[in-house]
Length: 360
Ligand code: UD1
Ligand code: UDP
Image (cartoon, rainbow, N blue to C red; front, side, top):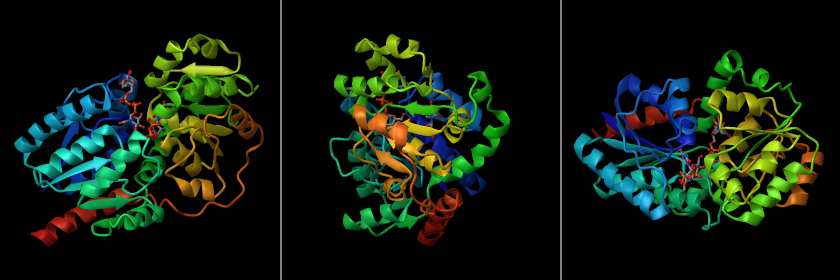
């Protein structure tokens, strides 16, 4: 069986690595990188560090408006699909690369499997919500990370092809945490002691593209004494510079502003932080896996279990709420086993194999 995997953005490389490994034991995988992320820190570093095979195709699409980026991706992906004629297309998460891959494939009758189907933020202003909802509605196989995701799909009338696999990011986290312990030098490089700092990441359009919101977050960071390590996504750097607040942030005595880091450094920084401040879906889960309190810089989250369990609090870009949470937020509850057992990759590969055997 031939599976054509489409990835393009940082979290997708992290989600795909162990699934690819499993698939390649039995099947042929063709790996397509859309080129949505292209800076070394957002792309190549993950291939090098995690041992992801070189993509068979890099479409080099790059950054643009949603329609231009998604449209260009669809055109280029369709060409590859027609040439490779895979049995399945496999897409991950909720980026423009996800939607473009799924839509290009399903239109030419290539069935699509979606890893991380079902989480919902219930807000159609969020581009990722549109990508995820549309992708889920055109896929034949839906790998749901949590029971909540399965329930969300059911409410939208999607029950066929849904498999509760557990969260693939838990697989990656468990596997690469051990590697990170051995290889990552980030704590000593930055002079960080365990639990002596907070880790921050910001990149959601809802926070970066609006000056007032980004200023409010930065203001909160500058109003506390805690040391804050902040690997800055290029989207955020662009807007911080545009709003004229990048230098103030970088030079503030409590801030350690750095370039985006690789995955091994990211999980070391997360698991050793006192608290995590983030609008990243992936970081919210990794904080939970590490049993580190998470302060989410968003009004809503697809990972509601982390909030229900008391390990995550939603403060949006509200300066006062951020400061209050930095000072006082403490987890209240026990963690349930909601993200599975770290064997999602195996389950997905087995399901794809069984499905094909069944169809003949
Ligand atoms: C994208 C995804 C988001 C995901 C995030 C992971 C969409 C709509 N958004 O957001 O769901 O959480 O990736 O990090 O698909 N840029 C660079 N270098 C790069 C890539 C981007 O400088 O290698 C800058 C460009 O100025 C670009 C901006 O970042 O315009 C945004 O990039 P884009 O890929 O459109 O969205 P992300 O914010 O990265
Ligand atoms: N991450 C990373 N380097 C960084 C920041 C994040 O490797 O500088 C990792 C992080 O550990 C998580 C993933 O990137 O596994 C999350 O991706 P991102 O925040 O870009 O997107 P999201 O999860 O919000 O879609």
